[in-house]
Structure formats: C-alpha cells, structure tokens
Image (cartoon, rainbow, N blue to C red; front, top):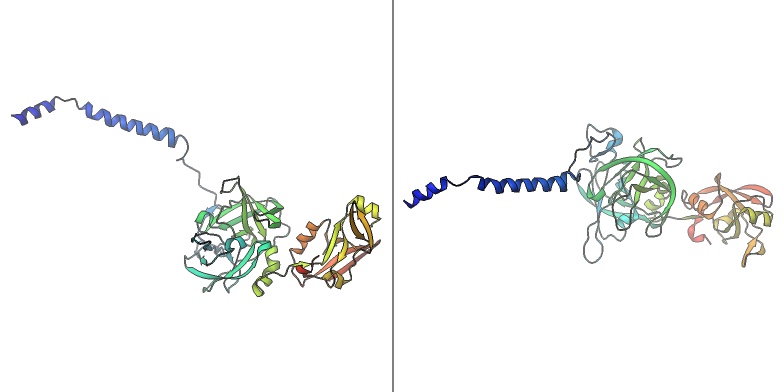
Amino acid sequence: MFFERTLSASKVLDPMKFVRPIAIAALLVGAFFYFTTYRSGTFRTVNSPPEKIEVTQAASNEALDADEQNNKVVAFDFFNGLVPQEGQGSGFIIDHDGHVLTNYHVIADARQVEVTLHNRKKYRATVVGTDRSHDLAIIQIKAPDLTAMTLGDSRNLQVGQKVYAIGNPFGLAGTLTSGLVSSIRSVQEPDGVTIDEAIQTDAAINPGNSGGPLLNSHGEVIGINTMIASNPGVSQSAGIGFAIPINTAKAVLNDLLTLGRVRRPALGVLTLPISADIADELGLASDYGLLIVRVTPGGAAERAGLRGGSERAYLGNTPIMIGGDLIVAVDGQEVQDQQQLSRIMNNHRAGDSVKVTIYRGKRKMEVDVTLGEAREQV
C-alpha cells in the first residue's frame, strides 16, 4: 500500500518543476558565454592567411623549394645562476662544419648550450667565438648532413623591401613571419651595445626570435634578428623589430672562427668633428670632416703617414692641436663625424686596407691605410 500511494502521488507531480531549473541554468550559461566570450571576440572566425605568411617547421619536404629547405632553425637551452632556468633563442647554420651564428646575448654566461635541429634531434654545442660589441656569437655542433644558409648582402637595402623572419617565438619552433624593411637606423640594446645601420622591420619578432635569420625574397640571410620594441612591462612585440645587418657579421666571421674573438679595426687617431663655423675659423678646405688632433704612436694612421695637429689652440676652454690632416671620406664614403667613421669600421676588421681621403692644407689626397686593432685607438 505504501508503495502504491507513493507511486500514485508521483503521478500527479508537475514535471515542469524538474525541467524549469535545468532550462534556467542552460539559459544563464548561454547568456554568460555570449556576453563574456563570443561577443567580446575571444572566439571568432578569421580569413585564411596569405601564402607568404605561415608557421612552418624548417624540415626537408618535397613541397618546399631549395631556399625554403635552407631555413634551418635551432633552439638554445641554457642554464643561468644557482637555480637552473631554461631559456631559448634561435640561430642558423653557416657551413657544413656545423657552425651556427646567433646573438651573443642568447648564449652569454650559459653553462650549457644545446641545439635542436628541424628534425628535433638535439646536439650539445660548444662556443667557438663571441663578439659582445656586435652582439654576435658562433657555436658549433657535430651533426651529419647539414645544410648551410646563404649569406646575402645587406648593403643598399630599401625601405619597403619584403623580408622574412624565422625563429622560435615563445618556444614555437620553426615560425616564419613576413614584413617589410621599415627603416635603417642606429639603435641601442638594453645593455648599451649600439647596432649601427640596424634593419628595422615590421615582421613579427618576439622573445625567442633572437639570433634567427632575417631573409630577403631570394632566401638569403640579410640580417640577424636581435631585439624588439615594446611598451614598458610588456614582453611581446609592438610591431617593431631590429636585426643586425649580415655584412656586419661577415666582416668579423673569420676572426670569430679562427681566434674566438674580433680584432676590432681602428685608424689609430684622435679626431675633432668639423662644422662650417670651425672650418671657416681655421681656414680649412672643407666645411665637414674629422680633423686629426693626434695619431697613436706606431698605430695604423701613423704608419700610413697621416699627420696629427702641430699647433696648440683652444676650442672654448678646451686645448686642442690643429694643423693635422682633415679626413673627409673612407673608401669613398663621406665622413662627417665619429659615428659615421665607426659605421665604416664595423664593416672591416684589423688587417684590412682602406682608402682614406684627406685634405692636407688645401691639397686633397688619398692615402691607403692598413687598419690596426682597436687597442691602438686613442
């Protein structure tokens, strides 16, 4: 009887009492999703990306052409401090002996460097050479069947020229992005290192891209991706990235490979930038250039016969020596200040010969100078 009464009572219960709570809950969940997720755009459809912009693993593939197969991207895992901390960067193979070019700051102070190739095989790497002043480093791995990148020419790059950046942003291996050359300018890295004629690009560069190649449309390396512009406290790219020009790297590769360091080139002179006012006051033959105040004894300039000042004068309250040679060009490139001279020097190494155009009095001359090492610089 009890069972029958219970069953009978259950038959007269309103079934909507059970359905209403479920329907209300579903409605609330749907409203929450609409206003907080769908409507805000967190989930949305996007157009298919252009063919030239893609995330790709730089591995051998029949669908890739010869240039694309050269895009060997590597990652560096290294340890710093007392507590191991993993970090990543990028780089690219430059010869069949396994030498990899990357940024100095990627491997600086690393206790261990490990390279992961496109086939996911990992190799212990040794540091061959470093150049902190150019933020460059070369490491080496022992691996079979390596394909080297083709190093291009970074001279005469044009604003608007298409470029491609390859690297491991945020650990996403083998990422390829495209963009344009936005500008060529000097920039300073956070540690104070100045990159002359850095390639500015809007190709997406993020943490992890450092050391990776910047390519032209022929697949040739024209730069080494090194840093990004970002808002304070924000680590991702603001759409402005910078790369070291490949010609700067090529100028020091031989030293890095053979000596492990760079023999920094120098003329061995102390100079004074000349303005039109100073030129007029001193009666110089040119209203621009670098007046040689003093040459380093035994340095490159003195060995080539360049002359420093011989007469004491004052620039304001500062004593200087005047009467020396006036440098107006090096290898046909106009020189107006020490920064321009430094840019030219960055494309050379100690032992190179350059043609220095000077005025000695009113006489214009060209002098061949074999560059010395930077320690000779006054």
